[in-house]
Image (cartoon, rainbow over all chains, first blue to last red; front, side):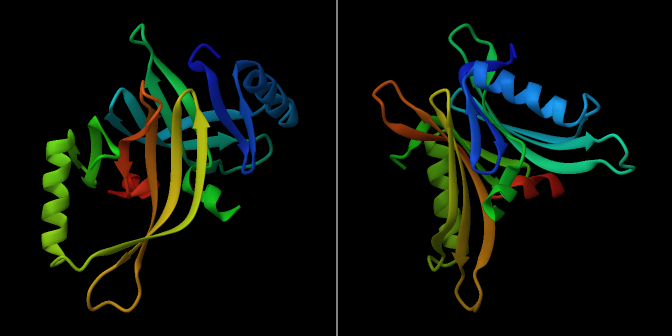
Length: 103
Length: 103
């Protein structure tokens, strides 16, 4: 949770967002419970494009789910912004990437 | 140009970025010249996800090119950030979206 900005937004699923650390924390707890605490997240290819104290991170996200041989592969989009203290915090977490337009 | 932050970044093509208004302006002039000033850009489906004074915009971008019947369709990713004056300015312009990982 420490990597999120206070008023960050997480796309839980297309059309359903969690905003603010408390909602995001609850969403992660619910997601973990849904996968019986067996969900593992790995990182694949990644590109970072920085501009105007923000960074667009495009990253392959591999989700290993109990009982499935192959991981689910998503191309996620994350926005980070540089805080006043110089730390980079996640402002928008959209693991669906551009496929959110299909929803 | 007025919609870009001073130190915004434009992905000209995967691996080649223009940073700052002057570089971005020159890149657009070169792109326009390459397409003999016949390139037309249209907007398709769009989703905006706002968090922590930034916004991730995911948008179908349709590019009409002289002599081609069908437009090129991209799923672009743009990051906007709210400036001190409250205006939204583009910080990262990546028209390649998540397909930039294929480059």
